[in-house]
Figure 1 (cartoon, rainbow, N blue to C red):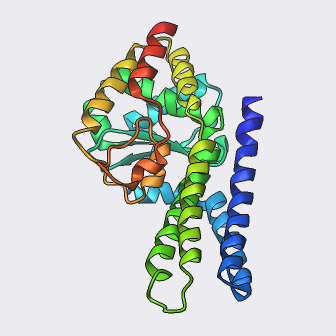
Figure 2: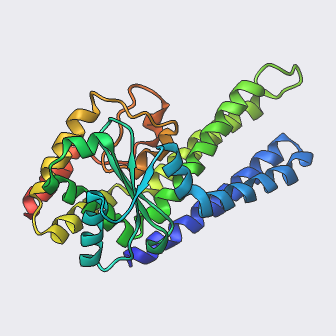
Length: 275
């Protein structure tokens, strides 16, 4: 049932994005509907087929292969989880974090930042990588990977409507401007709702079962949460925050609109009670 729900969410996301583009085009005028329809098709195509590469590229990830300690760790864990081997990346950011991406287990990738590699012990890193593999196995990454670029597009539409439709043209309709901004905000909120917070609790529990103990993941979550508050993530697209194991700290900004993680202390409590 969980897999079915996770597989159908992207259908609603992509269909909703198409309808949103057409609706905005219609508000701007009949002549805009076809161009906006084409934009919607192009956005959906890129979101489905290339969003995983976009996420890796945004984080400047460097792929590692056999012989690398992180690769060997992921290989061992994915065999225990009965998963295909994902691509493995190391990202240069000092903010400690990790994420998984990809539209299917066969197209998946996992990544860890240099900050996480330097901060976490082997046991803690095993817990983190098991968590990311759990997301892949549960097909959470299908929704998360598609949601990131779509949320970014919605934020752009809202900003575009605010900057270019509200006063630069004397004939511009202020109600259209307001509508575009509201639609962008509502759309982002809908995407946030589609990314269930419960998925983190499930992935945490599955990771603890995979490695045989919750201790490593509990220690890792504690460290990651504390240090992320001191080292902001150099991530150009806050809409990608849903991909990470803990919400990257980005200060007071519109990025909070895309907050998708439950409080880390609640996740730790759940792990301790289950263990």
